[in-house]
Image (cartoon, rainbow, N blue to C red):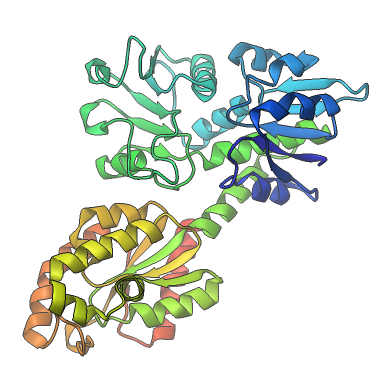
Length: 412
């Protein structure tokens, strides 16, 4: 390959998409076993590569030159071949994280910064925080003086940076710390980018703390790597555009609302308009169970159904580029909200109670039952949604409104 990424486990990397949005060049993803790294580097059958976990230190002895910033951090993530055939090591992660911080309008100046993790990315974070005037930087590791057993003894923490893989796909259910135990926290940065909203960031959202994910860091470091590959200076505005493009591409449109409110019909129209995949959680439950939902309720009861529903939502919520129509009671468990929100823009499709379809629906058979359900669920629909949409018109009208608010919130 001429340009690409090497690492050990790369099946979920976004680097190919980002580099091919940056310029008209082919960018390959190449998984390499540890024992094959020396041979790959010595053959020099590339012009420029990025390096990721676990080889950012491994490659350093093979580089003929190492930039000052890479030397300082002790990590190389970009290697180019110069005119004399020498390998030149650099670190574009530094500039990527700096962009991430500045783009989020979070400042380190005179702040106490808590860095979760002690690996190469954590060292990059420390370097940026130091250069941006942090008053104090504390590193949290599993076995260090400050660890996850005593971390809550740290007082006056202003900024928290997650530089660990905790909360990253596919193990998205975890968070490295509980933010509510840091009452002075005024900014949260999570270098992970898959999912878009990690559990840590969802905590920040709930607490009203400014936050950002690592997608901007990934795009910005790719821009700096590309500049090294081609000896150019790409405008930073390109990074902004790539982040918007990928956010729109990856974000799921999630429809919540009462049974019979038209979520499936509207969802299918949205999938056609956006060219996203369509998923109906009720249909997935029936496929999983091998029987219909009314039969599930009759044979096993509601709690069994809710367990199946949560399992399905846990699975589909980790995917990206979907339109997801949920069952009316999906909001009854907060874990479902967290799983849907991690990659989702959630829309409450609101329809007048009198016009809700109730045929074949176990919990909403008849006007009185529907009204009771609506009264119970309305606060949850409103709490969990990013937008509330009138669904009383035609399905096409509803789909158009949903798409407008989705575009406004993810593409601009």
